[in-house]
Length: 274
Image (cartoon, rainbow, N blue to C red; front, side):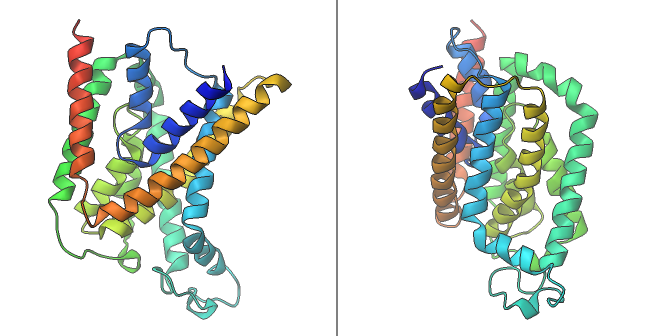
């Protein structure tokens, strides 16, 4: 793999991981549209995902720092730690909800992993799933109002969003799209749904990276520049995608992404019919 291909794949991964358009779905469709395209190795895929994790950690660094402060012995709840962000004394509760959501995602994912794996060979299923993602985004975009904040998150919210994250194992179902949409369906504010979605993604993606890396062969020294370039490209593109997404959530909503998913899904269905 050339350096430029590594960078390109990193950019695509970073953008599609956080824009609600399904990164796995695009990978399947690229394989259909470009028959000569070879899917990158397991370790390279893990490196790209690690890059997107770093972009989340940096983008939500204040929220993550507040969650960590809430665990300090002299910080009951976390109000005593001088927290001034969205959590406002509910850090430990948020951490528990993130753990619950992660466990539910893992349980559902491991239960249906083998059945879902075969879907990566079906461009028709991927295209149909993109249409479903677009529909979810449009329905969520029609829900207006201020919505609930992190302080109002419940066990039911964490469970439902955790299930939504597991659904994204199906190629074409966007992880960010499904989790944000179901958060909005639960009457969370758009920013709250997005923040919880991306915080929830960190343990899920890190877990996937660890599982993938276990089965990866050693990387030749000559390939390390490509891996490093892909990691940096994914991290930078992911951070940019997060900035854009949060800026448009309230101003323009999710309708643009819904239309994009429909267009790509419809085009993929058309091309796969030939």
